[in-house]
Amino acid sequence: MKNLWIAAALSLAAGAAHAEVAERTDAGFRTRNVVEIAATPQRVYAALGEIGRWWDDAHTYSGKAANMSIRLEPGACFCEALPGGGGVRHGVVALAWPDQGTLRLEAVLGPLQDEGAAGALTFVIKPKGSGVEVVQTYNVGGLRPASAKTFADPVDQVIGTQLKRLKAYVEAGKPG
Image (cartoon, rainbow, N blue to C red):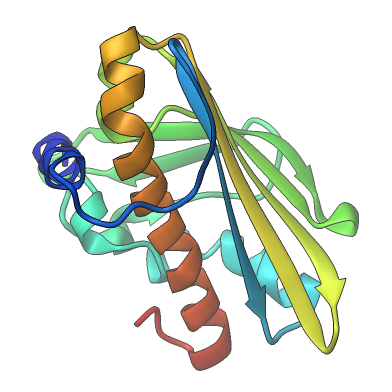
């Protein structure tokens, strides 16, 4: 997976389209992605816990999103089982608040794990019209300046794509 993230970073740095990066500093970045989903807040929140059904296989270490799991409770691991044993801890649930439609993970994803950085990936679900609006933010700090510059856009692209896959999964039963 690390190589896939690096390849994505290099291709995006070469001039491909970028998703929104809301803030940049020399030591990190903050992204913000928003989707509207035609479902109840409860269904969308529950779907966050079904991550192995909507995350993209291409952005896993094992090559299979089905190997990923997360329980929606504080301290739970956002983990991935690896073939032949072992695994990856992508993050830990810091806040699970279904009544407020909020899930926050302490997560340093992909190549950022090698940087010694810290990250907070947050999903906020609010009723909107006949469905919901989901705001996903990812706040990463503690990066070297070159890494902050290199990874902001590709990381946002990857997690923004995951949010779109969540929408497709909830609305159509499959991520794409």
